Image 1 (cartoon, rainbow, N blue to C red):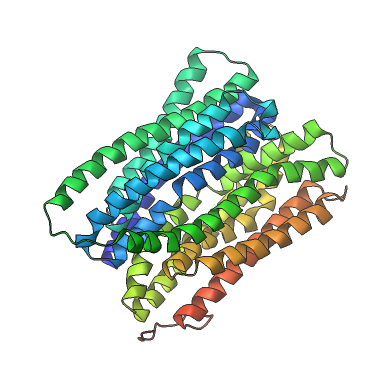
Image 2 (cartoon, helix red, strand yellow):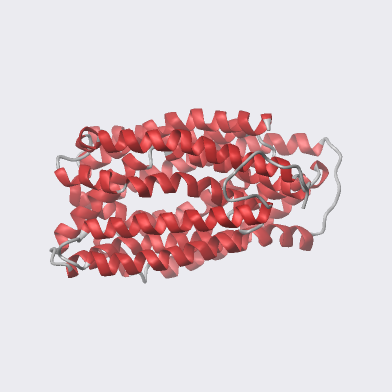
Length: 442
């Protein structure tokens, strides 16, 4: 448990600094792009994140789980096999992306080179995922924290430098903003690759044992495929969501420009403010996957119960005050990004969405560690279906419009949180109201 808390504290500390930097980054973007440009930028990001999800194949999760569960003598052989497998996968995915991205109509309002930017991002994400997975598995969270910090600070530096010295039109400004995103990921890859090579040399000096390629492939894909399926589903819904919401708003009586601007205020301003405290949840999630995996393999039911109890308490302790502060100071916080009065209202309407989201992130990591990825995917499918239905029926009503959309989002997140929690309690055999952990094994 000491390793868990040490790793979590390192990630939380660096993540806090990173989130402050991202806060500044979004302020720069909001001021440079304006409401309309921010709407376009936020609309294309989910498509890019979908490609990133596929490119990573959730290797950070599957490799960290493998490393946590297997003896050290198998690690180097697994990593070498994974690198060969990743090279083949990257080549196939890049070829598919070149053909597929040119056929997508969503890029018609953007710079033509954005497609090639996304293709270049594929190998960067794929190979950095291998290193991330290894360092997560051996609980070297300091390296993960440095990588996360580098990504945030370099994006901000590049943005400020380029936008300060050069004036761009809107289309080129969005392209440049995305270039800084890819550039920061490239810098992270160089850092992680250097540290990973040093670690591989150290492993070479230790005891080695062979494991069949088929066994390694099965171990990795047993986690990667369902987890990637869940992430892809989540990414697809996120990619569709901006266009779906804007379509619903147009049906409710808004013009296309108004719908784009209101979505930009919600995604670019409200989400940036509300998800700021989520760095704690993401930090807990990163440490939870290998910790839960190791405890579950060892059938340590007491440790799993303690972990769940402590994570829920930590989330409640920071989450509740966070949403209270966000709600009370919504007006001055939103004014940092936009002069629109609607932005502050959106921040206040979405407080349940943010709070439930803080709980969902670590609980999803708990499910992955317990081998319940398919359950997590099913929860997202059901909650998304409910949310989309509510978005349509409430959003098209001229009396609700954006308020209806946000009510639907609050409901969907509450639903997925409850399903995650009930499934975890059932799996580790604890009551719904967490009491003092009882020692038992599975």
